[in-house]
Image 1 (cartoon, one colour):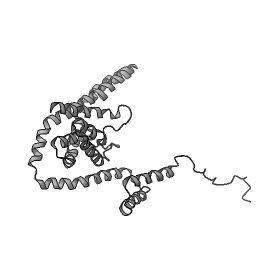
Image 2: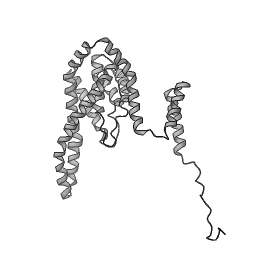
Image 3: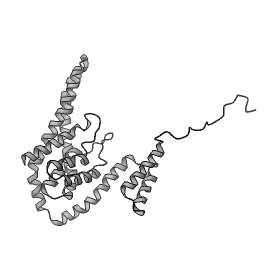
Length: 258
């Protein structure tokens, strides 16, 4: 169990480098789920759980003042608990959101501490020493965050596995039946969260078109996605083949009105 906890912690720590060099999205469940499955010896289950949790957290993106649940910790621990307990996707769905919200609270505590160390960067900026600014970024933004995430995830998995197993053993079958039904509903919630941020009057017709193609013509998701790409290429004139806009008027002299 200790080795598994260390491996799960390393996966979560690896995912913290998501924003180290741009935004790579390696902290998303669809990426870390298969990695957790690989280190725990069940790649297929990790891939399935990761893909389904990605649907749940699809709209969990930090925009403006909105702070989403901790997707990294939620995806890592929910996948790990589901695999080690042998309970599958339903358990991952049930655990993911509570874990994400709890981890967010712990992360906020970490973020409340780190500003004290930013004084090092401030002093460096006052004297023009960019080395102190870089050092602060590396120690707090990368190393500190990585160590914090590794410790939190490894301890949560090590001490939480037995508790999760005991709870699952005590849960009646009808609850798992309800969780199975919820497993089909929660992805829709993820899509709804995403649409709430991006939908507008111009995009609604295309959403209706995609729904009609899938519902009435039985087209697969891949076929609808390919059609959407073709429409997007045409709409944004990706290859620059659209003719230049016609001139609004014809130049003339001041006396042309007469």
